[in-house]
Image 1 (tube, rainbow, N blue to C red):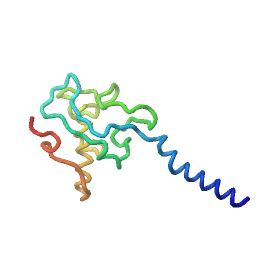
Image 2 (image 1 turned 30 degrees about the vertical axis):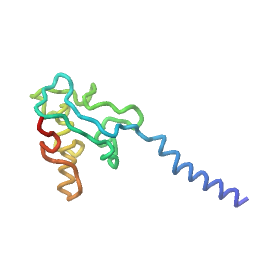
Image 3 (image 1 turned 90 degrees about the vertical axis):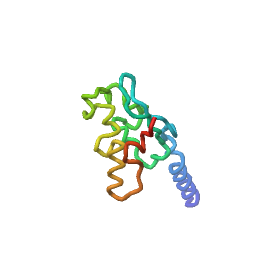
Image 4 (image 1 turned 135 degrees about the vertical axis):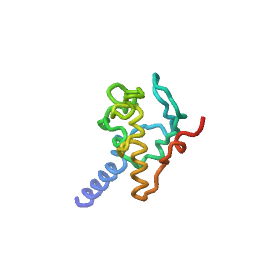
Length: 133
């Protein structure tokens, strides 16, 4: 009886350890190009972005409105970073601020915070993300 119980518990533990994480896996693209949305004027080149390179970061840090269940929306989706005007550049609802704000849930903010903490990080200068056209 004890042997059967032990085998059952070990089997349950293995199922939990290997099967459950796959239920919560997000099918994120490995590499993508970030471009300004329609209606916005771009002064810099598009940015090559690697989801794979950011796999250690919790998705919700950048996708701050994601509930962990529904499909992840793009930054310029309705209700998020939809302001593409030059005047609204510094507003939290601007597309520009989604990537450049000084808060640590934007690309620039996170990279600069990591650099300040002397951790390995990505680029912090404009030309490093936006190569010359």
